[in-house]
Length: 181
Image (tube, rainbow, N blue to C red):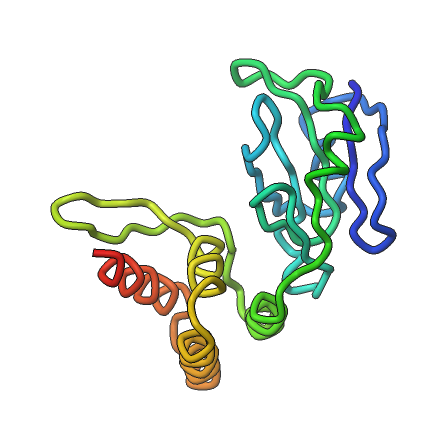
């Protein structure tokens, strides 16, 4: 099966052929913890869930924050197939320039066991909305400097006090939702 792999350390995208079996993705990353992100239409991005704690480089594929190496596989109604996105097109949507806010927060989060993509719920009126830590980082990154500094200071306190970091992220997501009206 034709796939694309992204190596953020060398900033390269490579076309590779792999034989998809039950454990292929786990073998590719030498890890049993894999994050799966359906961010590219008709494709899935796989990444090592341990990449954050291993302090691997962060980057964006489109708007999607990815940490460490990535494997992009085509999907068609839940079955995997060859990638259809051209390598040049994928390369054009990768951004290795990560804002300082992200770098600072990811450095702090690397000391925790948080998963950036695990969903939690917040409320907006009578509606429950599923969000995740990645969304919280995106939202606070676009806030003003004072808000970003508040976020980092409160996150640092949460980590130092060995409090639940996911609960902190859920609280920050709720604050962002409340501020949005």
